[in-house]
Amino acid sequence: MKFRNPYFFRFITPEDLLPPEELYGTKEKMVTCINRISHRDNGDSESEGTSDEPPDSGQRLQNFSVFNSLHNLGADLQGIKKVTKVYPAKISRHFFSLIKEKDDPIWKQCVPSLAELQDNVNSADPLREERDTKVPGLVHRYPDRVLLLVSSKCAMYCRFCTRKRKVGKIQQIPMEQIEGGIEYIRQHPEVRDVILSGGDPLMREDWELEYILKKLRDIKHLDIIRIGTRVPCVLPSRVTKHLCDMLKKYHPLYMNIHFNHPAEVNSESRRACEMLADSGIPLGSQTVLLKGVNDSPEILKELMQKLVQIRVKPYYLYQCDLVKGVEHFRTTVQEGLAIIKSIQGYTSGLCCPHFIIDSPGGGKVPLLPEYVEDINEEKIVLRNYLGERYVYPNPR
Ligand code: SF4
Image 1 (cartoon, rainbow, N blue to C red):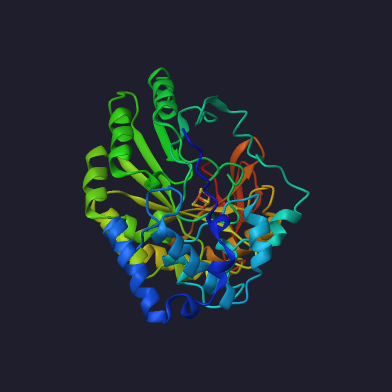
Image 2 (image 1 turned 135 degrees about the vertical axis):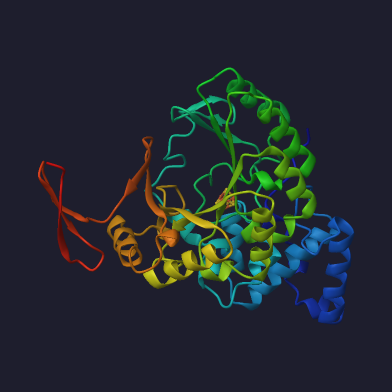
């Protein structure tokens, strides 16, 4: 199969750097042109959906409009080009529209930074996923659950991604490889839970996703199917009635959605999450603690409270992984613990995620601030969220 270059910004030409007015006469003409092509492509205003074909004129115009907007906001375009030679970049128009100014928390998550090339500390695969890969695209680390990679594409390439080494670097994961992973699950009766991941599983076409789900549901010992996705947050228009009607045929199906900042919870992501929730899919969230994006108690508390309002249960808050190219996003673990301590007790328990370190090669470890001062056969000495001391007796 012919390799298609998936690097979003690699298609930029000097012509693309012209202000839109110079290329189209007026800004209005440009917008009309983009909208027309977008609707033609997908029947939807977000045409970056499910195809990674080389950019046709429609997609190219969108890239062009993003690139010009970056230029207007003061981005280092040469720096961006340099980074995208190593790590792919793609920004959905929805996510891009949330940027208020250069270097704000939304910008930092999606606009390539030269800092990505200056990380000489971390490794490409710190979680040792390749070591635990049993057949191509299937990671089996824990006793009863596996990770099945079903897509190499995302709606946006997050600059802090744990799979930075992989995402966006091939056109798509072949179905034969996914079938090999499904066969592995079929032959391992201890596996009762599969997490579909990638890239983003919702970047597959509906029929492809249904093909995978149907095959998985045919495996009698498999109880739970989970989908890890960022699509409802970064490309909410991908969540359609057709998709939801298809997904709800394969219960029990859970979805973990990646949200990092309160600005990501808006009318469009709310609509997408409500459609999924109305389809009976329990929704959880995964958030990565990121320096300059959400490393404050106020921001994270607001995010968690907003997620509960759109029926997404905060599930995990991850310490940023030791991935090559993301060192500039890392906070200390102590900062993470302090943030959790400042949320726990101050708002509903429903809003409190588990704080997790994915230890290098050792899997997930939950961390809690110190609430236990002393414990013995007679009693446990506790500090509550206000730091007040209480004694709780054990049974005699
Ligand atoms: S959507 Fe997920 S897999 Fe894709 S780039 Fe972002 S964090 Fe990585």
